[in-house]
Image (tube, rainbow, N blue to C red; front, side, top):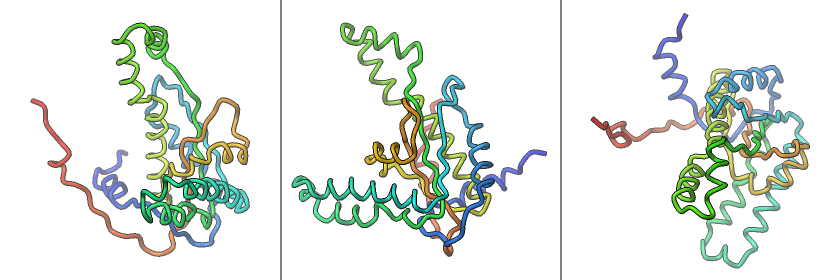
Length: 219
């Protein structure tokens, strides 16, 4: 039986980024089910070039938060940060809100080059057209788009299961430390961090731009 479009629409439109959670553990089987369904996301060349680290130990989340805070404090200490006023002060205060999350998912990916990527790399130094084509393809990095599709699925499954999560890339500035903490496999890189848990209270309503503002029909 196919899902009613109205049910899918409700699931999509009621999902929110959640940054405050109950002090309640997330069952491991729910995290595993979410990853299982996320792995059915479309991906470049069916490489399935993703790996998910499921974190349920508070001390590991704390260690990651400490590493992120150190990287933020370092950035705030640079004299150039003064040019941004209070921006980095607020950034410092907000960057590790996930410290209280009962669980998290760190998503990793490995670099991948298609035959077209390799061909353009071979010619880029001596061929301006190949160099431009290579840059265009880099903008549309297949492995990042593939991981992003899986994360979108992951967030929808979490929401369906009554969990709340936030898709973060800020922690990646401390990727080296995070990868060491998690024992990430050689050749793989953390590209996203997703704290998750049972939401603490209701979340804010959100709006989106009208379809007419983001669409042009090419006839």
